[in-house]
Image 1 (spheres, rainbow, N blue to C red):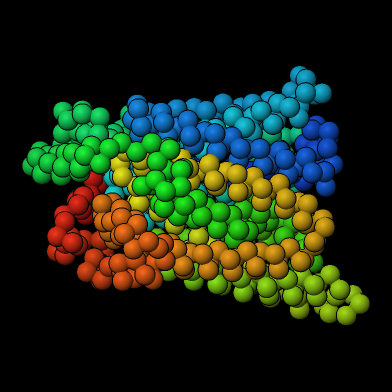
Image 2: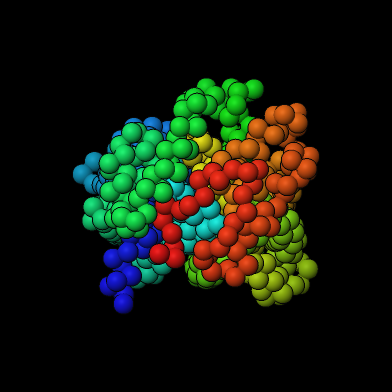
Length: 527
């Protein structure tokens, strides 16, 4: 039975995409304890509180931003699958460069490490841009969120894998050991090996093939996944969608980035999704987890194990993300999540202040530490459920096919620059603000929630074409307010498309505005 399940194309796509996303998660967890390894710091010629620690971490995101643009263009021209494979190779190369930093040329360790981080970022940023598009084009309308959320659960699995390996080698070999930081780096090569091995099994998306007039290949791709009896109907739907896009014209970056152009509005929604995700502060928590717990008053070893527990809890709670995202919607999750994150960080600020002054106030550590653990764990769960997936998913749903990869690339570029700023500034804020850093995050989450509630439409359970209708109606109405456009219909999931059974099975779906759109999946979970 397991063998049959593994042979299904749907299973292979999900496993492949999940592994690619897990690679991105692995890097997030990889640097967390490497940053505190004394041999690593000595090899790089820096101290633990040196701003260069944050620069080494953050330049990776600049590589991600550039890699997303290059990979999206490559995937548009050559194919989604070759695009993913090229990105995997780049990430593997960057990882090897990082591993070799300080070997044979100790005085050049820091530049080599920086180059390795950038090169690895090129690959991972490309994966972040191409994989969500690949998955979205192979998922049904009422399951796109579920598919991507399941893959991002693998992202947290990768993060956990990296941190657990870090913990094991650090406490086995010690913080002065060279291999306590080199082993976690080179272990990442497991992911490229698995991805390259599995590439031959994957289909190219029929949507991309039709877009590039490769109809025969598209038919073979559909037949391999669904059977010969499905080919004609699916090809017809894809060709009709492609013909409509040709009438509308191909979308360029100028159309997306110049105010007033047709795709400017969805581009702003995409940009603000990633900016707001960065403002939640969880980029800092994932990279600097042990330091966060130290702010709450815990010693280094305890903080490291509490961080590991937080990541494991994060992994488990991500199950609720893929259960809820297609049932409650992207917008609801983000607004609700921002509210509870703001509350959580405000409480953490209070607890951090009490922890810092516990001796003079004669407050036991556990009186502030245990509530701090509970609140931070719950805040991590809220972020994973509400904010980890939607900013990546929405760009794949609101652009036409000819701009979807570009939209995903813009999303990754903004994510890269936003996280570059957050990871660069976080060590500085740790030093200068202490526990007041939590209050900064409470305020930034409040801003994120307000913007999302005002301007981010609900894109779940709608066809790609229906989501594009929102922006046309917004232009006609002369406003971006979700409460005003289309009488507020885009504030929530369309009732007629919600799968009440919760099983993603086939059902009669009402047509919106008399249009079919691209409603049939390219990969159907029920097949």
